[in-house]
Image (tube, rainbow, N blue to C red):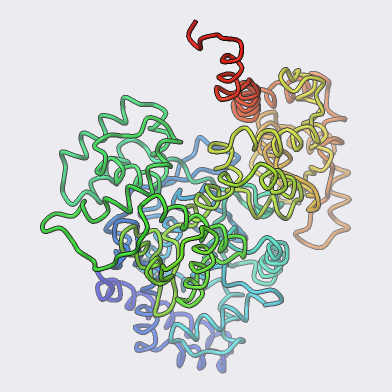
Length: 624
């Protein structure tokens, strides 16, 4: 399917919609605005609008970095669930999501958040009930108003209209707003951006606003934002994805799936689309699925660099690019490049900017007589990790690849430099910026990560007597320390439907590490929901809450600290709350902590290098 087909499907429906809007506005007596909208959204403008939106439904991938792929040609079913009700599942192939206010779709790196949103965009084009607006939040600038950015967006997409007309469409609920990549904004402006999104929602309460983000960003802790989580791929959908990218090599698909079925750990690796794609490319190159996550990541770059073209049938491709570096040296320089660009918060570049970063990366590695532009071309043409995006822009095919190779660079540094880096990440702003990089470092630089980052941050919350044997009481005490900053918000809607709604917020200290506060926040919310704590508090304090709500502006809620909610509930209820909280923490936080500490202390044993010379002096054999 190509854009003209989509245009045929969408333009007729959108023209019908705008004609209906013009008639309603005329009936209301808003003739001036009706005339402006009629002129702005005529048949030709709508056709141009559909064509201009092509950039959002045609994508570049790791296996098609040189040409666009229509999203429906590679799409596999993606599901999401409400965070407060994981038993519900929604698949988006034909989903036309509607909910007044702000909805956040939360997913890990490469889990398909943007694909999810782009698929929903196509649905809206076909459905023709709303005018869809797709805005990438990485282009949000400090001090900018969202409405001004959207008016500019319409202008860039060949619809000439004024601010008043767009405002009227939002007030009437005729525009559905898709905001992609909250986590892709610099951490320094996320709080401001969240404030602007909330203000926008208050101004235009009938508008559906859907925002994608990675976990643990501030928008996920905001009251009155409905959170949905993208779910992992099912096994049958992994197979479908492999078939989509296999060039009809169904034998390889079957063999790869058989190996995945026999390796539960690797099955978890393929749970996101980006990793499933990388896993299949690695399998095609090595004829074997990697045994573990660490081995998988180590093989990714060399797989793409050495074997990317060999995956294609027919005559071997000679790209005419040659530099005096071997594959491992190219990977070293590319990790330098990734760190440099990531540390500067550069996620896309002009060709000139990319060449400058490559020049510094080569100098850092002491490789002379290598043209920076040739290095960039090698990465682009032979791996697809970097690809062109427009006339003069180069981007990573996925942000997680930049984060991974940034972690590779950091793991390679001297111990003193790494210790400084990890200490800097104890501060909230740096920790937020490097959050995903730190997640990679926990696997490839585990000892130093645990010693210089995990343990200090962990102790700031839990302060155990023995870091190797944290007691249940200490886990609970730490969780309550986090709960001191958690509050529930009770609106009239929640009072009317206490079993359905739950608005929870968390105060964050941006100057300190908040990794464990955010990790524990989700188990706290799930425990509140599972024990009906909010509902019980409403039942016991309904009259008082109604009186307090009457004093507030419409839509606002009474803020009550969670500790206060738990304090007025029966003691057996608090015990149930703590029991569920520990059960949820045991499945994630406790397990992760124990694995890191166990590994770290094993690594404290004398190395083979040190013991070899000691045995030599003592005339002992290593295998005696």
